[in-house]
Image 1 (cartoon, rainbow, N blue to C red):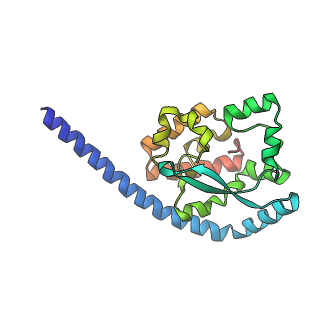
Image 2 (image 1 turned 30 degrees about the vertical axis):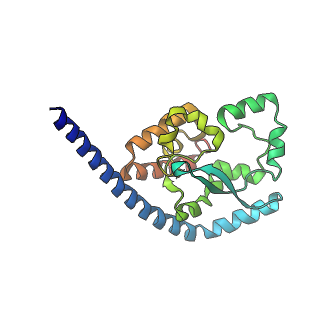
Length: 221
């Protein structure tokens, strides 16, 4: 009896493994197609944003921020610069209250580092557009948990390994269901829910819900 149960469990695991393998192949195909089309269609937007950033403040228009990707690999995640060039110096001069808020959520409600153009880019999530290049390169997907920095690993605790078992995404379950209005603890649970239940249909729903959230400006990411 025990042998039969063991074989049944192994067969179930094999089916799940094949199912996720097919899912990953299909997902990668659509990632490349959608990201490529988006880059072509949005090229005028890229140019406009580039010019606005350069006019508004000094520094590069696009920068690569080191994050943790699939299998714990360090990757450069590209973004339009939304902060002042000396952001690290400003961070060191945060008040005690600001530091407490930042350490809790890794963000500030009124962040003095964010530029005028950067504030608009963040509210509309346009600062994330360069990550379409990350998707083409294959170290990110359109949908998945957002890539985190090393200091955030502690927030995931025992769930960290599961988080790194999938590619990070341009958008994800928590962005489509609350965005920045979600606490970090809720974000962790939403990421785990997505990883356990991910599918093509769920990814499509997340993409459309994210678009609606961005249009309605329901909490910037």
